[in-house]
Image (tube, rainbow, N blue to C red; front, side, top):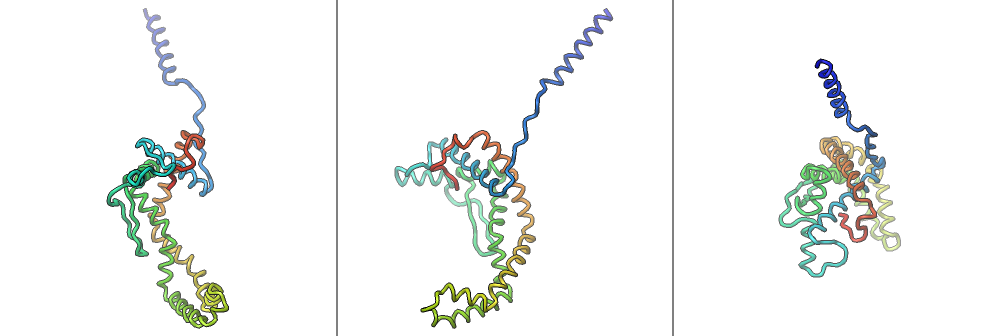
Length: 237
């Protein structure tokens, strides 16, 4: 009896080991991410188009061809970009305000890629307007204001000669003589670095969400090769 129990225990141990180990095999390869930023952005745009096209298809809509009526055109536009008042809004330091919807196929695609629409909207709009914010701060610089005044006086003095000298040439000459051009060359990177430092949190958020979207785009692209999606007439906002 003892030997029978020992044999049963040995068999049970083998079964447990076999169940724990399971079938062995090579692990699936890690997805290959594009190295170049341009290729990364292209991949994300492609994945976004796949998601938008699928969203429209499920509503019986397509962007290929002309809408059959104004009503159909409005329906397509609302389905793509959202309808009603915009839910997202961000006032920029430049004085402009950017708004967007949280509904619609485009918003749904961005939610699938980036995760948090509001955080992505705020980060994306902020990062896209860093150069404009830096330019606005540069124009407020006293040295830049003085150079602009000299430029304006030079341009006014060149008015009589504009009949024979192209306006563009006069502007280029005045930009050099007033010191405006070299001053902007020197100040622009300084103010851009200042703005990037001020918006460091949004830059970090933008990078993190962009990386998330890139990984999701790799998965979507693998599941939807380019030959299986519409190229002409596809929605690619």
